[in-house]
Length: 107
Image (cartoon, rainbow, N blue to C red; front, side, top):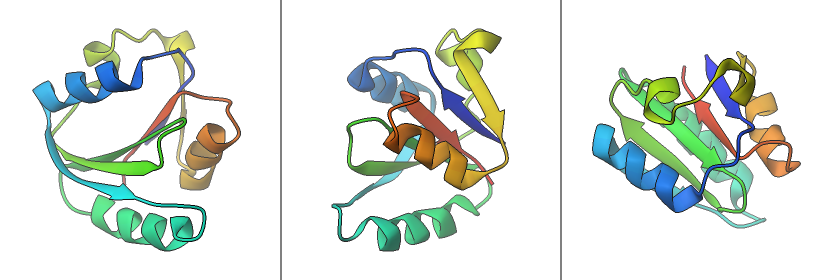
């Protein structure tokens, strides 16, 4: 289940908080030309056991983490701070369209 976070969160604080609780495996940096190819590689890596991804607004990277992050607890989110979806593209598009701050992606 993917989580689309609409509550404003400082990107640096979000990353550092996650790093304290989970292992950062890799970041996938992209530009306008390489985004789709990088996204497909990122999605392949998400299929691994106990992995999840992060995509944030205004950051041209996908982040791959290992661990069982309880995102709501770690970030002190309430149900009104995020939306859940099974649709990966919806989670990505919410960021690209500026409707959300971050998306957590999980197969």
